[in-house]
Amino acid sequence: MRWALVRVCLAVTTMVVLAFAVPLGLVVQEMARDRAVSNAERQAAAIGPTLSITTDRRQLARAVASTQMGAAGRMAVHVPAVAADPGAGVPGSGPVDIGAGWAGERAVADTRQLGRATTVGLGGGASVLLQPTALGSGGIAVVEILIPEGEVSNGVATAWLVLAGVGAALIVGSVAVADRLGVRMVRPARRLADAAQQLGEGRLGARVPEDGPKELRSAAAAFNSMADQVVELLANERELAADLSHRLRTPLTVLRLNAASLGDGPAAEQTRAAVEQLEREVDTIIRTARQQRPQAGQPGAGAGCDASEVIRERMAFWSALAEDEGREVRLAGVDRTVRVPVARPELAAALDAMLGNVFRHTPEGTPFAVDVHDAGEAVIVLVSDAGPGIADPDAALRRGNDGDRDGSTGLGLDIVRRVAEATGGDVRIGRSVLGGTEVRVWIGPDGRSRAGERARRGHRGAVRRRKRASA
Image 1 (spheres, rainbow, N blue to C red):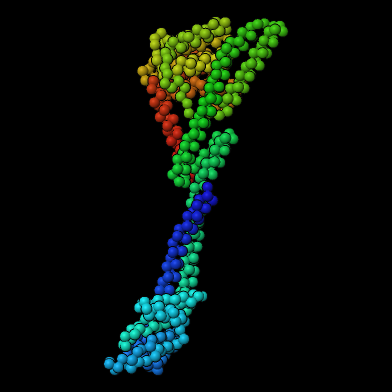
Image 2 (cartoon, helix red, strand yellow; image 1 turned 90 degrees about the vertical axis):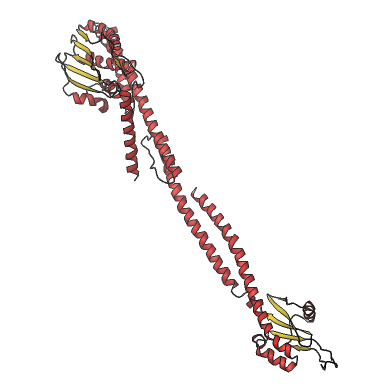
C-alpha cells in the first residue's frame, strides 16, 4: 500500500509538472523570440528619418554606421531606383544598397510589394527582419536587420533549467509526503494484520491500538470488540462445559456412596475402582475447561423460576441418599412461592453443588438443613450442616479461581457464586447454628440490570486500559 501510494503520487505529480512546465517553457522561448524581433524593429526604425530626408549613398552609409546594428554589421539598406521628374525638378537616381544583405533580392522585392515587415529564417536558428520604409521621393526602401540565434534563445536555457529544477523539487517533495502518508496508513494496518494473525494463532490477548486514520481507528475498535467477544464466547463455552461436567458429580456422588455399600468381592472392588476412575476423569474435564475464566456472563439472564419449587424437587432427589446415610434433613420456607431471576437449570445446578459438598465433605449421619427467606429486597437461600466446618472460608470461595487444592475442583461454590452475582447478590460462608458450615446465597430480584451495568462498566474500563496502554 505504501509503495502503491508513492507510485500514484509520483505519476500524478509528474503529469502535473509536465502539463505546466512544458507550455511555460514554450511561452518563455516565444517571448525571447518576440523580444529579439522587437529590438530589431526598433533598430530598423532608427534609420527611417534619414531615409525620409536623403537617399545619398554616403550620407546613408554614415547614418547606418552610426547605429548599433550598423556598427555591428547586422544592418543593410536597400533603396530602389528613382526616375527623374523634370516637371517637379527631381533628378533621377539609381538603386542604392548599403551592406550585402542576407535575405536575397526576391525577399526584398516581396517585402517592398507587401508593404509590411516580414521575417525570413536563415537556418541554424538565425533570421532576418525586413522592414519597409517610405522615402520622400515616393519609393519604398527595405531595411534588413540580422537576428542571430544567440539573441533569439537568450535566457531560454536558463528558464528551462529553472523549470526543470522546480518540477524535480515538486516531484521529490510529493514523493516524500506520499511516503510519510503511506507510513501513517500502513503502520496501523500492519499492526491490525499482526493482531489478527496472533488471534488466529490462539493468543487471545492480542489487541490493536486505536490510532491512525479514522477508517483504521474504526477497524481497530471493531477488531478489539470482536476479540473481546471471542474471548467471552470461549470463556462461556468453557464455563458451560465445566458446569455440565460438574452436574455429573451429583449422580457420581450417589454412585460412589452406593458402591461403598456393596461389600467385599472382586465385582464390588471393580465397581468402586471404575467409579473412582470416572470421578477423576470428570475432575480432569472440569479443570481443563476452566483454564480460562469467563470475561462476562449472566447465568439465567432473562429467565426466572420459583426457588421453593426447585428446592423441593432437588431435596426429593437428595432425601433418598440422606435416608440411606442416616442424615436428618430439615426444610424451611419452601411452602410458599418465591420468585428469583435465575433460570431453573442454573438454580438446580447451584443447589446440587452445595448439597453435593455436604455429602462429599461431611461424615455419614451428619444432619443438614435448607432454608429459604424472602426478604422483599432479596431472596436468601441457606444450606447448613453439622459437619466439621470450613477452616478458611475465604480460601474456599477463592478455590474456584485458584484450581485444585484439597482434591476439590472448587467449581461447586464458584457455580453458586456466579449465579448469585449474576443477580447482583453474593455468597458467604460462615458457621451454622448446627455447628458446621453455613453457605448463605443472597439473590437479588433485579439482577439483570445490575449485572448488565457491571458488565458495561467492566467493558468501558477495559477500553480505557487499552487506550492508556496504546498511548
